[in-house]
Image (cartoon, rainbow, N blue to C red; front, side):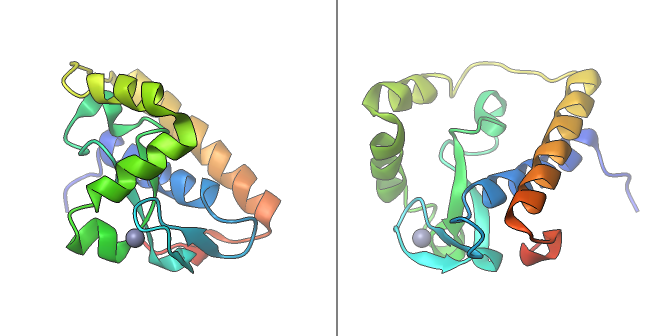
Length: 140
Ligand SMILES: [Zn+2]
């Protein structure tokens, strides 16, 4: 089996962080960034507004939000709804700034990956403690 890269490890812990951040209290539910529906947290994906192939925004906390599976996987992200709610959360200017980062070149060093992995591991641990939950409340 291929060794898990630091990029993949960061994807995983970052996605856990985003979903726990967006959980409503400790209710094990979340509101989908695109369609606004309240759903169980084990049905949450970490949905990228700007596609994750773009490295400059791949690990942006603003660019990533809990999203329901039907929007993320079957409705190509439901982008109109996603943008509308991002503007509602952050304002038009910040969304435009985020969009302008799309084609920036961003390369992460292994050192940065490791530091970010450690950072988000701690955040996840804190959120789980705060909410009195275990990581298994999330899906893979
Ligand atoms: Zn949705």
